Amino acid sequence: MGPALIASNLLLWLAVLGLAAVVVALLRQIGVLHERISPVGALVGNEQPRVGEPAPILEIESWSGETIRIGGRDTGARGTLLFFVSPTCPVCKTLLPHLDSVRRAESGGVRVVVASDGPREEHAAFVSAHALDRGHYLLSEALGRAYQVGRLPYAILIGPDGDVRARGLVNTREHLESLFQAGELGVASVQEYVKRENGRQRVA
Image (cartoon, rainbow, N blue to C red; front, side):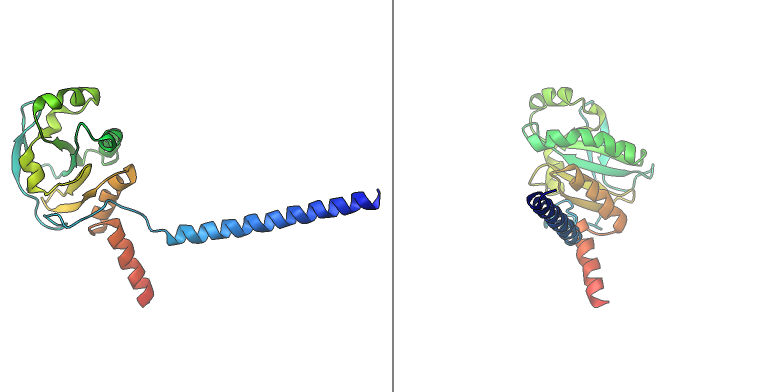
C-alpha cells in the first residue's frame, strides 16, 4: 500500500468521523428544540361563554327535522362537541373526516353536532358530499351568535353538566384533539396548561 493511498484512507476516516460528530450534534439540538417547543392547541380568544361557564341552552331543528337541545345537563351523561363549519371553508372540509375518529375515540361519550347557517339550499350538496349525520346537522344563525363564533372552523366542547369545557379555532386535527385534552386537564387551552406548568417549574 503506497503512502498516497494510506493518506487518502486517513483523510476519508477523518471525514467520516467529522460527519458523525456533526450528526450527533444535530441530533442533540433537535432534542433541545423538541423540548422547547410547546404543544399547540386550539386558538382561544375572548369569546363568551368562557371555559367553566354554563353553555347557552337552545333547541334547534336538525337537518332531518328532529329537535336538538344544545346546552344544559345531558340526561345520558354525554358531552357535546359543537363543530361550526361552512360549505365554502376548505379547512372545514379537511377536518370533517376526523369527527368520526372523535366519535370512536370517545366511545359514545360525546355527541358530535355540526353547525352552520345560511339558506338550506346552499348546504344540500355539502351534506350529501360529506355524508354528514342529518340528525346532528344544524342550520342556525342564533347558535353561532349565542356562542360568539366569528371565525371558522370553530369547535366548542360542552361537558355532560352543561358547562363549556374547551373552545377555540381549530385548523388541524391536533387542534381538535387538544379540546379534549384541555377539558380533561380543566384548563381553557393546552397552551394555558403548559404556561402554568412552566411557571411551577421556575418557582420550584
